[in-house]
Amino acid sequence: MLPQLLTVACGLSCFGFTSVTANLLKAEGWLQQYGYLPPGDVQAQALRSPKSIVTAISAMQRFYGLTVTGSVDSNTLEAMSRPRCGVSDKFGPELKTSMRRKRYAVQGQKWEKSEVTFSIENYTPKIGEHHRAIPLTFREIPFSHIRGKVDKYADIMLSFSEGFHGDSTPFDGEGGFLAHAYFPGNSMGGDTHFDLAEPWTTGDTDQGDVCEGHFDTIAILRGEKFVFKDKWFWRVRNNKVLAGYPMAISHYWKGLPSNINAAYERDDGKFIFFKGDRYWVFSESTMDKDSPKSLKDMGTGLPKDKIDAALYYTPTGQTYFFRGNKYYRFNEKTRTVDSSYPKPVSMWSGAPENIKAAIMSEDGSYTYFYKANKYWKFNNQYMKVESGYPKSVLRDWMGCESEDPKRGREGEVIIIEDVSQGGAGPAAVVIPLLLLVLVVVTLGVLLVFRKYGTPRRLLYCQRSLLDKV
Image 1 (tube, rainbow, N blue to C red):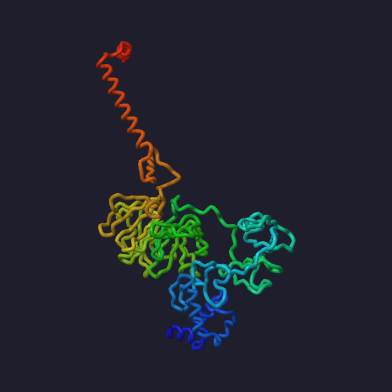
Image 2 (cartoon, rainbow, N blue to C red):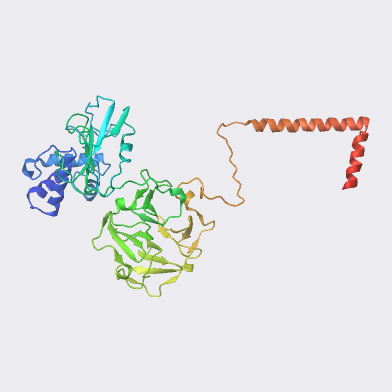
């Protein structure tokens, strides 16, 4: 604890306004805004106990599931910079550490009438006047009637504003908290304010289904599978899509377009994305200032029009790019393609051409090639695809029940066996009984024929049938 206190104290008083001090000021302002520190002048650092700052930072890290260090590290700053609601995380001096508790303030206020009106004061030009969309917000409110009102004296006033806008909680611009609302009551009671600076949209209910497949590309970023399709991406872990996905690509990687062609994590930890003849460089979720760039600027010897797939080959620390039926080995330091390259993809024995993605296994023993909902498992030691491949990406990687739920196979027969009851079904009893009855009847008929002879009518029928055959 003592080193952490010294770090905070020195950052605030010993070294002047350095980048460390700037981060601490930013963090303290955030901690005040969301209830981890009591209100006060952020600039009056001498009045703030370093221990209280360490305690507040630790509480925030614990609440957000971060490693508790008590210091403002990169993960803490990244969490603080995410867009969020303007409501504080805590109410009172102690943090509600139990994750089972409710994430809202209990004020005991409610509407005392069954009919509540609302009015939209203004609209953001980013989405226009969507009158019909607003009432959907109130579907779950147990009122007998909610109606719109065009004048400015409604119970709930909705507005878009920037910065200081007439209350005690100014907005902080794009990327901070998104909105705040007031509890039922008079004056501003019930009002809801949205930050006009945020990139508001009407939303998109047509989110992609990961089990439809046909992805643009798949990449390993920070040790996890990221699956990209159109304007969406999924995070996949342990053969399962994580909760909260798909997410819009532009929501996390601002400035990155939809329908990317390839992606990989460079040896310096930066993410590289490709689309057409351009590429983008990101540090986590922040785009480099000079992005995007032309493929011509990436290095010499690479394709100029498009990259189909990119692979950082961990066994040798080299980067491979694939285009059509060729692949290129690229030196990141010299920014040049190695001599004797490109080479045919057939050098990767059994791998397909025109792939969509190439990723490495965690231990570096295998390379996986993806194309058209199939994947090939390539053994890096024996330099060939394992037997039994390709296999279904949807089934093996995404946890989907079938290979392609929207497209059946010609002549395919699916047999579903219901064993949920754990016992024999009715058919298992009835069918054997019918067979037993049939055997008994047949034996009885044979005994009758043997004792009394074959009936004349049956003999005549047999002769007539034989003649016709």
